[in-house]
Image 1 (cartoon, rainbow, N blue to C red):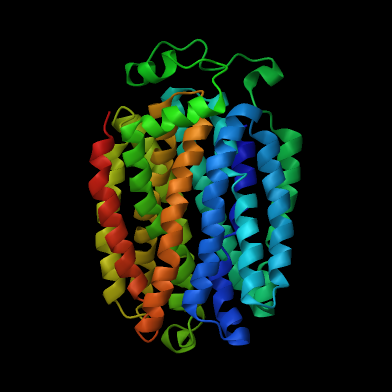
Image 2 (cartoon, helix red, strand yellow; image 1 turned 90 degrees about the vertical axis):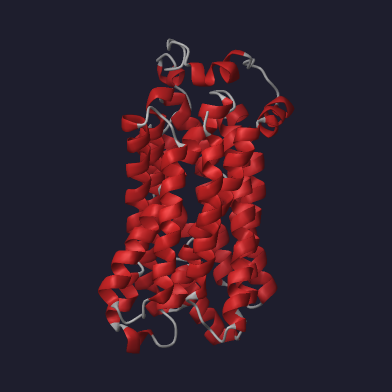
Length: 406
């Protein structure tokens, strides 16, 4: 079930992380500003945030398998509609609805994984799940780099066909709960863990939606974790959306030639490996403590981002190394934040907590996109400013992380 969920999410980002590659083509055809296109990106991120708050709770109630499959199928359709846009309103509208469809994936998939794996292995399995998301970024970037030769509209059309196939396969293969195949839940026979005993013992199996939401919103450590991931996600999407614009701008042929096109792949590759390593380190060496890795990686990411701002774009090798490190360090905390959801809120509230946390994460990310676009426009196209904003966001998230300690 872990592999099936990872397989499905491996293709999810083909439906939402290709937008940065389409920006140069859209600007060339319509002349819209980077700030305007930043608001289109924000429309997706905020629709995704609203959907996370809703669909995480629904996954606790209804199960994750059907929701994750439905999201994949709908996202494919809305990407195709986006590709036919001829106005800014159409582009932002279709992209926003696609954001809601995309929100049917992450928390429901996390619900399935939580059902099948015990708390003692959550860091590792969520690390693998987030690694699949990171590899999805690699796949999305590679496909977009190839397809952009055919025009920006095809960036929204071809990669998502893989997402459509993955959604259908996941529905046929996956099952929501071990009991669906005659197995006992891994939670049923485990000894109590003092770290989550208070959260788990008072939760009724038939707790309603309002009760789950209230429990999540009243937990101050969970609130701090949500704000911290908000800054982390702002940094992450700042890199994912604007690094392709930075390296594939008008002068990329002069500053790096064909190699500049592939520099951007270093970022998602680093992200995938960072997510995988952080969960394993937390479980194996830190007795499932999450905050030291979160804080340390984000503070180091801030330093690397400042380094990215100062290096010239024609320094290809150095850019590849620093982008890999930036991706590794910025994305490393993701698996630990998702493991914190059942850690802090208990097994039965896991998807609700995941949805609420992801809602906050994408509200923050959405605020960052038009800000970055506006600053680039005002600075006469200094796209390197994205790295300064990423550094500030990482610094804020890293400083907050120690407050999460249990």
